Length: 120
Image (cartoon, rainbow, N blue to C red; front, side, top):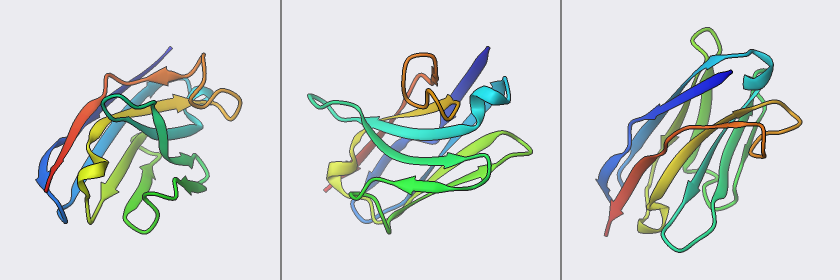
């Protein structure tokens, strides 16, 4: 069993920054790939960034150059540092933990989500 708990959301002005944290516990295999997703009102959940246990990262085009995903494997904690935030970044951000075979898919583990609101 894997559990993930997010923290760090909040309200910030456009151009500001926030750092989200996700603490994962449980199976090592099912925390190989950690990811951040987001869902804005009325929109589908979308991938923001992923990071493997080996440190390989992947970003959505909309956040490249502004967001950085990192991982403290010793603590099994993943961070999403967000800079130059825009109103369109407003969403509920979800942490996801999975294996290379089910990241973001059924069988992976989702956190409860943390709200990020960017005011213009």
